[in-house]
Length: 295
Image (cartoon, rainbow, N blue to C red; front, side, top):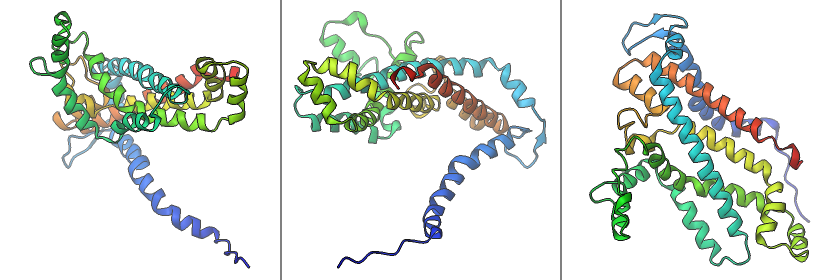
């Protein structure tokens, strides 16, 4: 006779959740309130803190360096959203096709960069982009494409695209996993019926799979937008915001203001600005994508 275990008391669940909740509040929620508090002061890290009310926010609105960094951030967000989510969607469709072999191997290889530190990825790509001994220019020369050889990290015209490529390639695997999970939830009978009706892999992906995972697609876009708005590590290692300020992003600007110029309260204000812009872009992307046509 099977023995049934007694149902745990409600406080048991609370006890298990408390450590996780405390860690989340201490690392995610509390810093926001601390940044808001500091943003109302003029503080350089010393003992004295002068209350200036909305002075930092008024300075932020007229800070052209902040808006230039925001523009750079927006361009990188667009490149990464199209690159990461778009390529991940294509890869996911290829992985469910009936013609592709060694699918487990491909999934592992594509996902592996996600597990690597962003600093390591940035350092490796800084070596690959090197004008004199980097692999990028080496292969271009090997293919007799000398006219395309450039100082990739020193050209303001291409620097945002150049800096975005490592980020795109690193996180394709993350969205691939999201899409693959959504595709696995589609009843197999629907796809089999489509095959019996004469649909090839492309038609099945476009007309059946994509509409049925559209909600996951929207979530992936919002995650990508919000994640790219706080990009920091790759840019710090690759360009440190250069040449000039042509690749400086908001998080890097906040870091420099806080720790290079020691304007900690103004750096906190920039962080709040990043949060507000991230919310606007994330909610805007959700509104833009809609989705009622697929419901």
